[in-house]
Length: 495
Ligand SMILES: [Cu+2]
Image 1 (cartoon, protein in one colour):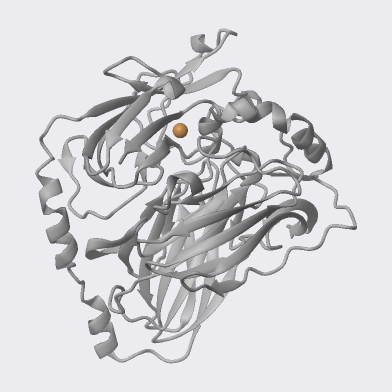
Image 2 (cartoon, rainbow, N blue to C red):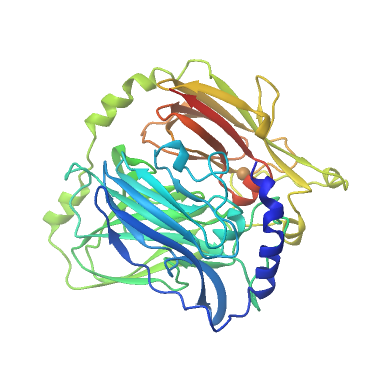
């Protein structure tokens, strides 16, 4: 699987890790993220290149698509087909994966369907966007390194139905990331992926590439926020004190029922769409508030006068999406049927007697890396994260699932609480969409199409996957270091 390519990275990544803290004069400075509207049939070029970026007054060398971190936000009409021409001007081989997009398999940007794009080479991805919602692009080789170094950007797919979302005054995309800094710059990377136990948690937070991202609003404005967690490993608990967040959308478009939320858990690669009415002037903050710590991710300064109650009343209405309710009704009948596939999420420690140590955690979610240096030094040679097929006993790349197009497959994910180091795993499926039907046998009351599901420690999560898109695909953990340490399988969908 992906570690096949580890050696390719050896020299390039070592060279970069040595130069990660100091900038060379020939490399351009990172630019603000642009928003680009594309139309059906358009071609657009993305160039992955090195940039210099200032993070907390340190000049660091990073990677960027078209010079910005995040890369350009691409707005695409639902149903459009777009050609994305990727040019690689970085010293590391790359592949572009369009996360959540149900494109043709040959353009999925994984090693299953494509050779790595080397320095100076390009590849044209012909992408179809059948689904409204928020998707994103990132590399699918050494994600732990390439994505962490700045290679990620958003697709916002504009719904064909103008009433798909509620009316809003503005739409704001917030891409949330964390990066691991030392006093010298970005913490170095090595040729063999480290932080393999828990993944690489950052200690510095970036929203749309900024450590102190702030924005203005006028009282009375309704803002629609599209949120993405682009971190390698860190889950967020998002809170907007004093303001109700109206949750309207998930990974693949809208929810069955809009609902007000006081908190939102977003694991790596998950998206959420929320609407907020700023009814009173003041200073607000989007926080990451966990049992361990609180960080301000975005501050929002609201000016003007209090708004009329009629607008508040209007905003307080929650829509029910009858179309989705009808679409999902037959799927709910699968709640009590037996799973077609069962995967146990587990891990193996290599030699070295680590298994003797108490590395367990009873937390449902590990919000911080509490293993510290131990995690930092643990490489993918020492840890194997595993997807174990309960019916065959096969593990990770030895699993060879095959489905027919049109099948609706129930996959049960069991996050083994008795493994050496149980922790949460965001499980992502390529090319298809699914429902999180139930958790620990309790039905999900508000369904939406998803492509990533957070499986918390000890939980059993039932996915209902619509095998709608033929080709070669992957299912894997979206903690980059877990993917690199083997937590991945391939499956095919036949015509
Ligand atoms: Cu994982």
